[in-house]
Structure formats: structure tokens, C-alpha cells
Image (cartoon, rainbow, N blue to C red; front, side):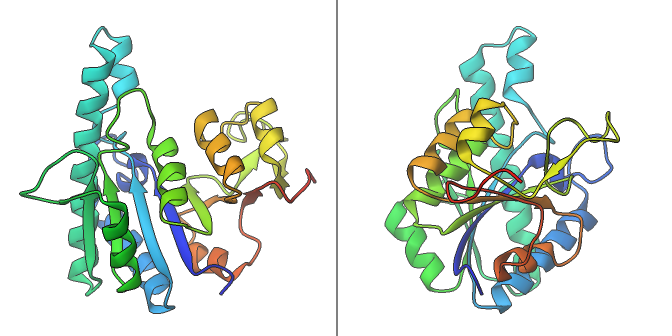
Length: 240
């Protein structure tokens, strides 16, 4: 395996499948099966999950809600997703711990860096909920931050498309997919792989980002093996 400790970023939308809102149990079960396959290869896996399938802080703020309050509500939504994913994994026999940046001791453990690393070393999947615990920061930024904190070798950004394009492939059939990109190119051209703060964090800590289609069975394991899946963003590669 190319990577031994991985941070997987899942959007909240990834959990709702074709539903317009909420969580699709079948989709969650499919994702859990993919994760189980990863763990069976002896990989240490941490997950940051978003909450956009339930509540979006930015959208609520644009409708007049206080931005900080809206972001805190969004953080609670991510915990709902984290607990749902934990349940699906443990039903498959995968030991899982939810760690939250906001204290919710009745349902999850508080995020403590050393505890998170110890869980990984014991073969447990950890799911980070409640983002970074701070308003005005996205779960993309949380993914980059947690990856640096736990010494992850790579960030996997699981999406609904098969990589990063120079424009929206759904709007332009001639859109070109990149095989590799530098952090600087992503920032300069605003390609929105992740938000700018997340890209900068990954650049500063030399953590590559691999963007791929989550809906293709086996893609996570392929990426861990180092196979060409999606688009890789790093300081060591050139635009091709």
C-alpha cells in the first residue's frame, strides 16, 4: 500500500444519494462497506464528514440568520452524520469512534489529538464531527487541519465527479480533467478542489490531496494502492 494513514473527507451530500435531503441508508451502507475493505488492508483511516445534506450554515446566513449561529447548527448536523456512519460501520464489525470538536459527551468523545492517534493505532476508524469547533471555517479546512494533526499521509476528497476539471463538466462537455495539479495552480485558478484555507494548510504541511469519484466501487482502495484515480494535488507534480 502506498499510504498507511489516510484522512477521508466526505461531504454531507455524499450520504444522501439521490435524495433531496437527509440520509440514504443504502448509500451509507455502501460507503461503510468501502471503508471496511480499507480497514481489512490494515490501513489507519480517519474521516471528516460534512453536514450539507441536513443544514448549510452559509445558506442560512445568506437568508438572514446570524452566521456564527448558523455555523454551529451546521456543526451539529455533521455529528448526526458521523453517528449514522459510525452505526453503519459497527454493524459491519468495524470498531469506530466519533470525536467531536464540541463537547457532546453523552454521544461522542471529545477531540483530543493523542486519543485520536491512539484509536488509529488500535485499528479503529475515527470520525471527526462538529468541524473544527469554530464558526467561519469549513469542513474542508477541518479535514486539512486534522490530517496535519494526526500525521496523515494524504487527504482523500471523495466527490460525485471523477477528478478536477478546468470548468464544470456538467455544463461543458469539453471540460478537461487534470491528472495532477500543484497547490499553487489550484489557488491561482480558483479551481475549488477545497477552500483556499484547506489548500494552504495542505501545501504548508506537504499533504497531497486526491480527488476522486466515491460512487465507483473500490476507488478508495485503489487510491490507497497508488493507482491513478481522479486528480492528485501536491507540490511535487506539474499540470498535465
